[in-house]
Image (cartoon, helix red, strand yellow):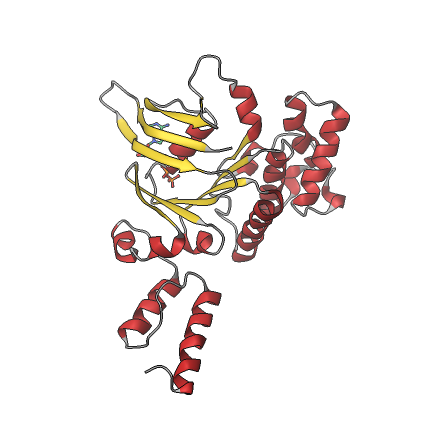
Length: 289
Ligand SMILES: Nc1ncnc2c1ncn2[C@@H]1O[C@H](COP(=O)(O)OP(=O)(O)OP(=O)(O)O)[C@@H](O)[C@H]1O
């Protein structure tokens, strides 16, 4: 599904002395099958923006269109949209509430009107796809580790077979291994099923390796919207708003400043290594410098 966000504004406590203009004239077009990172400092409007995408929050002004359909039209089927656009909240484990993991993951598809059997099949499929060991399916979700709970919450949304998966800081509070496992899982979902993924994060480092596009939010506005390497070229402006580019960006810029003829566009350790080796090889051959 393509998503068009047009001149979106949102004001909390509108018309009172406590107004907060959380989104200001946001314009975005998201194509089917994209993997996008939304990055920004605390309070920049990331959560408010994504809550608009499945109609949880209604714009103060502006519009949202799915496949060209205006979601604010009176006859728009918001329930159908919510089953296609899955939203995984920050700390989603706080929303696990059934007595077994299996029941928790079956809840969404049952709510979509599927029979108990159909919902059960969906739950199995979703739990398998997030890699949760089968012996845990009938245990309480409260006995799991943080990373496992996060997987169950993601499975709960996947069981509804969304076309768009939106996750608000899915790696918050996880250790590096848990973080990589969740991000690898999302990358696999995107690759194998072509689901559009919108990932909200504080960390450029987290998203650089995975996403094809980064949207940087600052004070309710879109500051940058581009492929990672082009966004990271603005590393000094990012720093000025409290965001750090990946460490390799700094490394490549420092090497360049030292006279080492590398491209500064590497966004991951692997790309940086390849670029450095490329230059070293050329120097040994005597073809460069
Ligand atoms: N329920 C609310 N009532 C009033 N103001 C709010 C509410 N939720 C958010 N805000 C304000 O709106 C602005 C945007 O908040 P939002 O939660 O969208 O930012 P964020 O980028 O997601 O932040 P974080 O990274 O901390 O989750 C902030 O100034 C915040 O204080």
